[in-house]
Image (cartoon, rainbow, N blue to C red; front, top):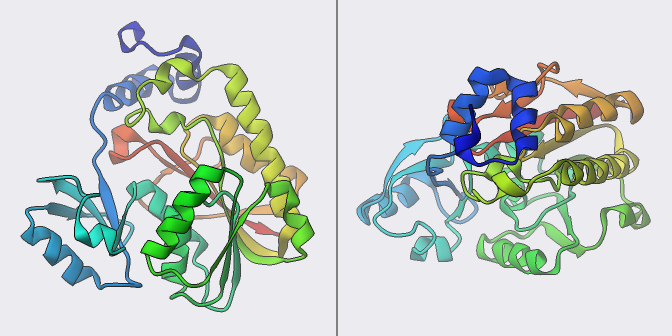
Length: 299
């Protein structure tokens, strides 16, 4: 039934198990379509209205992202949205609408200490700084050398002033001696939800890779549980729709690490699988990448 899409049979089996045949067919069909581009206006350096006006005068056409007041979907792109002077000046960040949700759900206050555990290349870090108005402190951590360059470049481009960047492994975080009010863990994952952008991934994701990332996600959740304050908020997200990387990780955090699962403010996402408080974004429902998000509180 699905052979013409040329996926690894393992992935097809996972989809059918999680979503059933009908929804799997809709998902695979949506993954054949080009992913719309979107931007988040950076209010640290400009205001939404004037930035949109400048871009519209260049021929760009937008529609609003329903769940982010600074988010705009690019409906017409006379040339690359990443090749404007406004982008170079840091007036906006090119970002999928689904990935705008984690920072909004974490909702850090201006006086809080926040950890971004897998921060590069900086879309969510700069969004956190924007929400905090460049106040408080964000510790942005990543281990990838090349991605860290991109993170630091984006922080500078976007006028962010409240971020400390550290190139280190997550399991070294306990050595800092810092307890965080809030943590964003946009966890390393298979990237299965990005097939619209990376179509070759439909063939290469296999059970071994899923198991490896699931183990890594569990380890990062353990570290988060050690460095977050009692009562602190953790937002966990992945660009994957596979339950092994999503609800199963949340279940582990609740049952083994002393977290409580909270509901989301976002009313546009689909509910989680067996954990309704979680949120999911689907290519065939939301016209975004595949994305998962959950909000937890340390008890």
